Image (cartoon, rainbow over all chains, first blue to last red; front, side, top):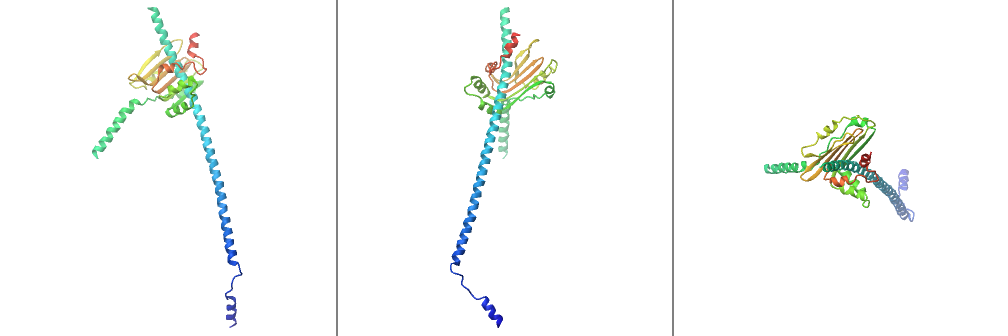
Length: 105
Length: 178
């Protein structure tokens, strides 16, 4: 009988202290707010890193492209100069031969 | 189905017939033995995309650069190999024939200058009617060998007019005075 009484006493329904539910809800809200705040901060960092990487990559690409363009320009000028020089020389020689032939006549 | 295959084959054949003669002939300008013997090598390889890129960087106000840009507009490629040897007899004159043998039937010699004292110049053009769509210049001096291969429509007079520009002295004129 004693055991039965002991069990009844131990398992009897007891009302929580006043304001318990409110405190639980407050705590849940606090933790949720805290949990939400952290990902936003991390997202901002991630976005900044990505943006920096993108801008850096674009800048590096622009510099590389500019260098390539300048190099191509120099090569083009050199190629045209060599070609122009040879054609000019040939034209000059042809003109010289032409003028000599006219003088001989 | 048969008709469709026939049409596709005809289109392909027509494309090849039109495209092949129009495409400029790229020559094999690699002479590794010359590179080894030369004291100075100029190697310029500019395909169509590199030419477009180079043209973007040429000045609009500088008359010489503007002239080059106008000339380069109609081109598909420029390839230059120039070998400067310290002494004579460093290359075989048969190289000229080796380059010439690569040229197709549409190529015609337009100027050939033979000189004992000065340089020998062979200019050959790929003629399509009145238009020059390709140019090969072979200049052989005792200590220098130069090949220029230009693909695309080119104006010879405008090309010759470039000589002596860019602050570079008029080399041929100086040689003539010697």
